Picture 1: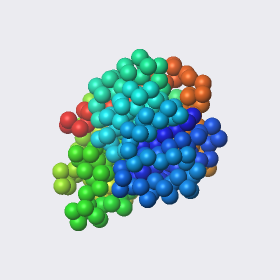
Picture 2: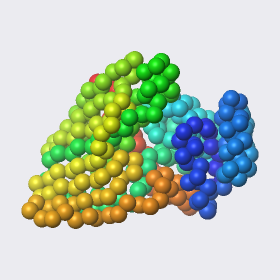
Picture 3: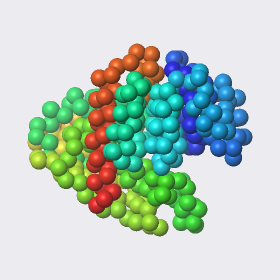
Amino acid sequence: MRLGILGAGKIVTEALPVLATIPNIELAAISATPRSQEKLAKFQTEYQIDKYYTDLDKLLADDHIDTVYVALPNSLHFEFAKRSLLAGKNVISEKPFVPTAAELLELRAIAQQKQLMLVEAITNQYLPNYQIIKDNLSKLGEIKLVIANYSQYSSRYDDFKMGKIAPAFDPQKGGGALMDLNIYNLHLIVGLFGKPTLVRYRPNIDGDVDTSGIVSMTYPQLQAVVVAAKDADGESQLIIEGTNGRLLVNGAPNTLGTVTLTMRHQRPVELAPVDNHHRMHAEFVKFAALVDHPDTAFIEAHLDHSQRVLEVLEQARRD
């Protein structure tokens, strides 16, 4: 994979040390706006990136690049994913993929026509513990209740209260607790149980943006509640309760820590240790492998999943 990165924000700062350790990823270029030139130059030196651009279009015109990682603010994902596909590049879009399911359908049509890879960078779908959770669901009997919480006081919340609005708190740029944090919970629940029959969202609104909120998801025999907060701290975990026992996953839904199975009247059993790799490692290892050895069925299955999540997300936003 000859990777070009669009963006120079917080997620890119976190991703670069991971990408630099994956042997079959070549960091071909990075691009952002001219105001980020000093940061781009630092990234280039620190991570041996071949080139940097202060014009996003120049990166898209670079024939050496075969794949683009769209790591821009949420509101720009669709525009630059589309432009990247039209430029003949495979696309990895940071979560949330795009604002609407219709936009994803448009991107999928372009990717299919041009025979390009299109994937969403959503960490929990690629972590080893996610498969362990799926493999053990049947032991729980009939699953009745699911509770997922991802609450962490944002480092930008104090600035937000002072009137300094970062993209993560700007509703016009796709900010808010639902899009930024609860999206991980939605991916987990939809991935494990499919699309619910009813979705309701009850947010705490501050300055026209949801700084925290609760999504309730109704299934024929199951109720799920997913919680996210950028304005408060909480114990991030996933609890799945069934007639025969329960699963407890410690940690945030983007990392999936230890998985503990407790059958009724039995001692808890730890099923999986914490993966020592960074949370973004597994997804990019897989993306690089898909570029080298395309697997259309795998990609389409994950796009179908992302499509379902976006439909749930739209229902929550409308509510």
